[in-house]
Image (cartoon, rainbow over all chains, first blue to last red; front, side):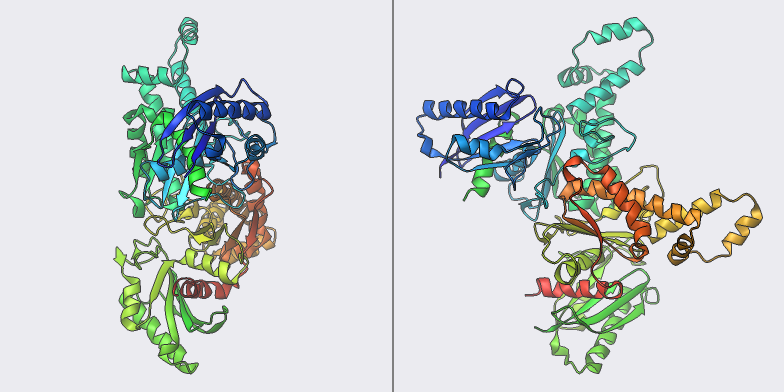
Length: 319
Length: 319
């Protein structure tokens, strides 16, 4: 078996690596997505970097078995990225073609979350599972649905957009242009909004708000405040977990999975997010599902998963 | 190919028939489910009736290739009916076993909606479709999910309970013991509640309410009032379609189907329910799905679908 190039394109950065069939990352790199707003330019830079990786590991270019690419709104059937909400790209980008112009090997594209879900199935904690959900809590909320042992792509390749299930028609404005999507609450961005709302609600005067506005608030900040026992930070995790628990309970009514894996920055907060999620999940499950479904952390190393997941596309489909 | 017995167990009545492999119902019967509260008794009565059907059509018992049984909360993997919310049965009923004690042929059980979905796939309007949703708007709201050309049963056989997706945590009490499930709004029972709420809200004095309470209000009544242009009846259909449209738009984010089929008494109301459903469906779809997914009436004859669907289990799985 040849090696695969796994490429994970995110709104902020693009990660890539060379992966062998046992799921070992041989070498890796990362570039800023934002720095190369044109997809052609980004692909060229990534391919240059992969040529470098091949060279410095003494692999001939022919050793490369294929590209696996995870990208927001990546379409498995067409190889394109279509109207990605958290990317600067406009319209439809023929991503697989762009890679195939650079290297004479097959390029397989899918949603970044689908790629990670396949990674979880081949190399992670979902080994041997036929029915599971994989949820990434990153900038947005991505999801991959595996049922009957197969990734669910849907009629058009766009299945598994659980982050865009509408939880509240009058809710927060979403990047997709609608309101109240799950990811506006349950994602790194979502918990940040919730936390700031809670902080502002508790402030009594202008100077409080001015002091607060000088802080750089991100996921890590909220996590640290919660670890210190700050009420608003704890409440932000509780609120986020409560909405996520309800949403996941609703998800179960679709595909009745064996387990649900949580992945991504927000999931790294551990019990701060898992505990309220599990509690409200179980409380909202239909009785036939109660006590049957585990909400688990991903079995993939956070820094490896995106590359491994993307590369696993090559091992799963490029036979 | 032998013939199959298709049996559809509903909260009110149990329908059954003999079906050939081309989806023709050779003969059929129906008994009251409510009259036989013990499942053993119901199964014995159904089997007696099927022996009669075989006899009067000059089939030997050996011609029977199997039983396909659709039942609320029927489990394909275990052959049991577990905690069916709209039935009088308590706990777990080993339905396949009960049938197999009466006839020495395989009995295959699933959710009544899953059975009808397989019927739609083999004999109806979903022929050749790999990804579709089948929604029954009956006493409750049942659903069957087909993805990658296969029925989604989930880890435990209980996938496809879309009727129990929670639309409003503070909403109507559901038969399942929770609140705000989709089926409390979008079902024959749901529209009845909505209509009565609307009528009562418009009443100004006790005598109005007394007159109203003498009417026998059911789905047919509301349909007739709507056909006559009564504001509350039209509004009841609008409200029901609005909630259904939103719920179906959320469904699409899971399996991205090619089409959604609506079946059952409420779907028989035609454009009265389809028009507001389609309108709010399209309005709430994520942009990547817009204009791609058809909401269609089932291609199965209303009076045949339940039996055909159940029998199709035998043709699909009993090889």
